[in-house]
Length: 92
Image (tube, rainbow, N blue to C red; front, side, top):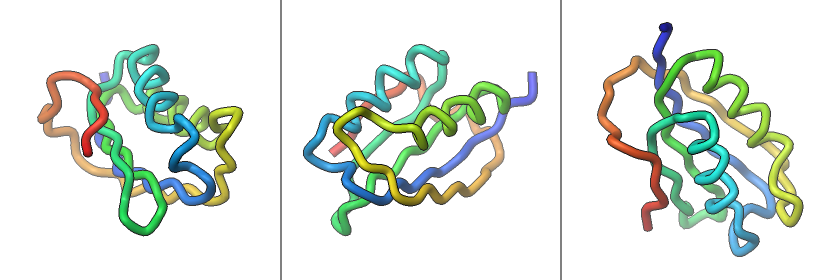
């Protein structure tokens, strides 16, 4: 397994539309670990770890977005796998 980490920042209409819960369900469906949170500037930040192929598929699904969200831009920072997340959760 080729495990990686990624920090993903999603810009657009992604707060107040259930986007974090969409990301939580999506990450759990892929078996990924990490966190998702709202940022003060209106973006959503996702930190995720898992198999690189699964993380890449997850990112593609995040770009497609939740039906009530309008994803305009996705920035990805690839990171080394640290195994620091026991589950995937929403943080505040």
